[in-house]
Length: 215
Image (cartoon, rainbow, N blue to C red; front, side, top):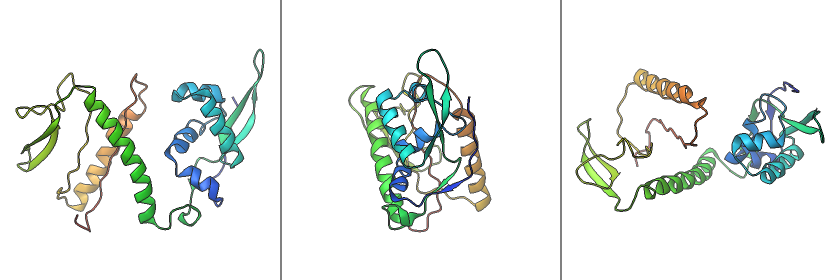
């Protein structure tokens, strides 16, 4: 397979910048990072429609985010190979549609948040009806609101329930060293599972941030 290494790339083109702030684009680019690959094998790996991947690859190639790195010979028609134009892309905010860091976070998190909500709601609906909020004291002694179908038990970790975790805890009080340790542990747990090739795709999101502006 063709393998090429390219340096980091700072994106100055507005259209390319807009493409890179789309999570679908970054997911697709990730499949082309390490080596030249064909449209068909990336479509199979990502579980995406072949025509959709082919269209996106043409678009990203025209924008300079993917490069045509040759062909792989085989019986019949040779397969054209593509690779990401760089292992690292940097997009200054001034070339995106976002005017500031706050605007970027609002736009991106709004899109991702809507995607999260749709999938969480569907996972809950798939287990049945009758969902509500269970408000009770947690192991930390504080009151918490959690989605449940029963007032008598925390169903979120029951053996036959989906592996589903979605919550916000705004009152975590940590010293700096403990916060950095938690950050490292969360990333360590994520990386331990990120390389798995299981049968089900899962959405995973972490947020750990110092609170300087109370809600």
